[in-house]
Length: 429
Ligand code: UDX
Image (cartoon, rainbow, N blue to C red; front, side, top):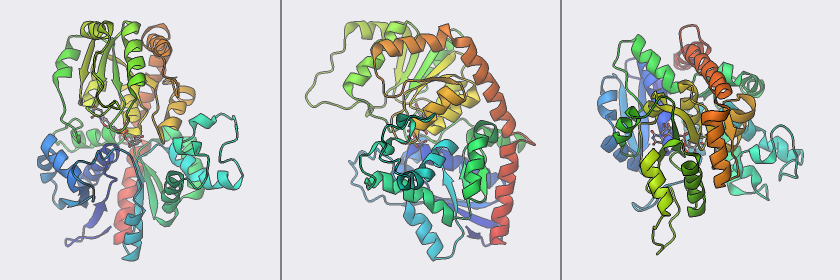
């Protein structure tokens, strides 16, 4: 952060080049612009080119004085898949070196941030590598890299170092809200100063755009081309009858897992809308794609498959009654705001802990972690959409209201965003 030419603070935002990070950081960028700050948003060239191709981003941000996009090369060859998540410690190091104040924005939940933060303490206490400890957070609920046999595992080290870097920053922004994660935020505040919980960011931004009489827009920060045909299909389905299935932007299933999911969905006899990116199932070279006819038939009757949806709109659609998700943090928050209960199949990293909280703490759905069996899928879909639906819907509606209140005037996230902006001004003033 530094002072711009007009004496307005100028904030540089540098996301990891992955959909979940770019999406929430763009929302933060827009919130800062609406508060009158100047913002420079740094994208990788590859992602920027996709955003420009698939969204109205440039038009949307052109109305903000002092906003600009900048790009940097990611150094990867064009044909590289670019799947996976990493860390970017060099950003903080460079900023400190040239004397620019840094605030960390971690796009994960407070519960996963806290579990990352505690890893060095767990190693010191001999609790990692895991030796069969079974507390409320079972081994399998910890971030996936905690399953490593060796604490020198590169990914484990990277995630830990990156998280502990917050201690060298001036503060920490989290996309969450006090009513959802208050007790964990209190734990974090014992070790980290200036924690700003300002989420759910997508709802926060929507509210602010309305307040300031700007046109609201649905999520259009996609790195994939949105296929809107699913919205007309949803329009034709009965209220709350459809299970929305999406495993985010990174997860890749094996063909066996994919077929188990598919069988389970078709056998449940419920309607489903399934996001299947071109790269979401691991391909086996030379294998012909002849799918069992009963799956193809069942899908024709009750299912719809697309490559990429306008997810926030889908979750808000009257026909959607459940979300089968990988528990990425953006998806989880989007489901919470829409009041849609979840079945969780976490794929990696923070998702393991998010799904435990969805199932056991917030009671917003079912955790299917580490299981991929058609019978279990069928049973969970029926539980969520029919047999135990009432209790899930009740807690989801309650949490949705708390989420909306938190970003309204007088709400905790609204208050914390004001504090963040004030602190940025003071930091630079
Ligand atoms: C990654 C990590 O996996 C996740 O755990 C971490 O919390 C953030 O970074 P990703 O796997 O992509 O993100 O999941 P998620 O955080 O849920 O973000 C996916 C985003 O893509 C959501 O905002 C969702 O609305 C959007 N999306 C997904 C679409 O717009 N359309 C789709 O069809 C699918």
